[in-house]
Structures are given as C-alpha cells and as structure tokens.
Image (tube, rainbow, N blue to C red; front, side, top):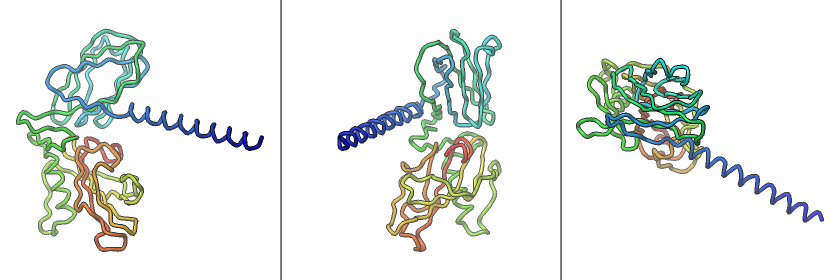
Length: 265
C-alpha cells in the first residue's frame, strides 16, 4: 500500500511539473514580440477589451488619440513602449504615434472587440530609404540624419573605455546617462558575471558598456543569442574569455537599445 501511495505521489508531482512547464512555454510564446516593419501604410491592430497590448518603438514616442476615442481607450507611453487598453468595443479608429526626437510618424488603424486572445507584443522597426534596415534581428545601423547609428554608438562606447585618454573625445548629441553598477543576470547559464559600467543616450538610442567576467575554470565563448534582454545590437570587445584568474577572463559587451538599460534587460 505504501508503494502504491508513493507511486501516486510521484505521478501527481510529475503531472504538476508538466503543467507548470506547459504554462511557462505558453507564457513565453505569448511574450515573444511580433516584429512589424513600418512601410508608411497604417498598421491594422485588433484589441481585446480589458487586455493590455504592448508596442515597442525604436525611440521614445507620443500617442495621439482622437477625442471621441479617449473614453474608450487608455494609452500609456513609457521609454519607447506604448500600452493600449480598450475599455469597451469600438470600430476602426486611427492613432498617430510620433517619435519625440526625430519626428517619425507611425499610423495605426485600431479596433476593439469583447472576444479575442492575448495578443503578442509588437516591435516596430523602420527600413531606411537606402535599403539598410533598422531591424534589431539583422543588426542594421539605423543611421538617421542627426542621430548616430548602432555602429557609431558602439565605436564611441569602445573608445571611451579602451582608447588612450588623449584620443577620447566627446561627441555632440551623445550624453552620458546614469546606470546602476550592480551585477545583473544578463548572460544565460550563470557562468558569466555581468556588471554595467557606463551608459550614454543619443536621440532615442542608448548604448551601455557592460563588463563580463568568466566565473568558471573553463574558457567560454560568448554568443549574443545567450543574452537576456531587448537589444538592438550586442558587440563583444572579445568573443572568448579564458578561465577565471587569467588576465583575459574579462571583457566588455556594448549593448544598443531603444530604452534605458534597466528597462531593456
């Protein structure tokens, strides 16, 4: 009898674990952003009443809502992320979203219904007229008039850390911003210690230099796919770390993001 009870307990435990795993996978799938390219045509968006819809933009934005829609739709804009919450169903209405720094305009044709699933977060990106993509997945340069691109920001951060003092120069439009210098869980696996060093902002883009240190007795190869967070680009000063205690057990990674470091990770 005791063996049967023990077996039943094991079965119940494993079923509970399996249920938690399934729920976690479902949640992870829901949290995965759907990337949408802005092609100068209004983006159709269907909301479910009572459910927040998250939209990430390349820079800090302001949302314009028609007066007739304001009692039915709550909008919040925080560091380049917009949250939309419909209080009641409504027909197609147009929202205008504008980047505060560049003036870039995005248009959305929004509807709301009582029934519907939990929508994926959306990530909006822009492809430049020259054909170079401002696409986080491809690591495009996102160069816009008057704003440094990903490559320029990364190069600037690396020079600030590693160049001789006589060669370190400030660049107009790039300003230093505060960042907490506490260790963070940035690299999957727990073998690499990550500590933010310094961060800068340039017209809606942020670049943060983070120190990476190998905690193990084995060499480690760094892979940007193992980084936690929403980064537009990630560039390692060195791609391989030697075992802890070696002079080469530490390097830096330069993370470009659309929002401050603490929000993006």
